Image (cartoon, rainbow, N blue to C red; front, side, top):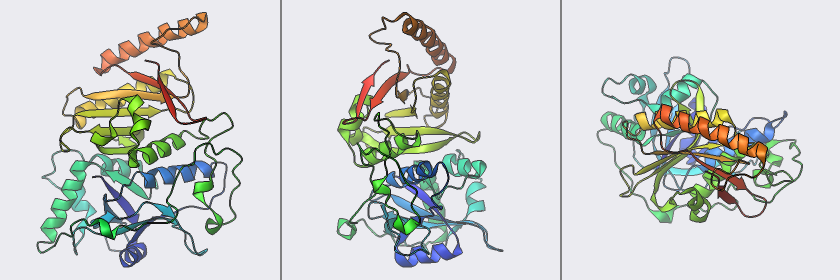
Length: 368
């Protein structure tokens, strides 16, 4: 089970609790990169599975400090619904109470708690980055911390057990449609827009933005599509946590994708750090992927070398079968030397490289 923070203000907090629907603000769909904006928002929403926990992060207003309310539970798939022009948060998901906590916890008391000995990885990353993101993932430890603090403030709180009979079936859940190519025309209004009809692939079958890869990965992992992930060595039946766009340290940069597997459903057995590329393999992404893998080994994995670094890109030289073209041979040898030296520098596992093709069914080919 995973958790997410949804950012709310005083007004949207009240409407969220009253309607049992959590939602995300969608800006006016204008400008050169409006499709990228939608793909970004879709990626975050598609990371949520039915049963995941939802916390509401109320922003500061007047003398009221920022505080975190919880705990709610996702009981539907995410969907888009904009019935009136006044609705500027049409990306939605149905929620219910999981813990009946009346009193919220102040953000200050979370960030400055002297008993929290490990980093608040994603919470602090969001605060430092200062980016307007309507929802952000929580690590498993952060979830535990928040529930413990909320329990302390609500000694008489009750837990509402999970009941699949309360799941809400939405008619048009959010989805990426493969093989959908063409020109995207900005809609005149949000209530005239259907994100499921977006063309997220170009005529060659490649994604129109790199961010779309995160959207696809979240959709297929939430659907537990084993056939999609098995070529990458990932067993979806063992995955206990995954997310996209995760903060790396406090450097205001982000990791594309992290997946955690467990043999017993509790303890980490495998961790995958995945760098996603719309273009061909390059040196900067190689360095980035191995650097992020080192950091995850040292933070989440207590210094144990269990992270598998992976790059998924559009094109790459073939490190396994080799190349016959002289220019490609030169690139292969030079790149492989760089990879090996960087693996040794950061003491990581061997970098795995895959190319993707979405022109028919999604296909991954291993190149290293």
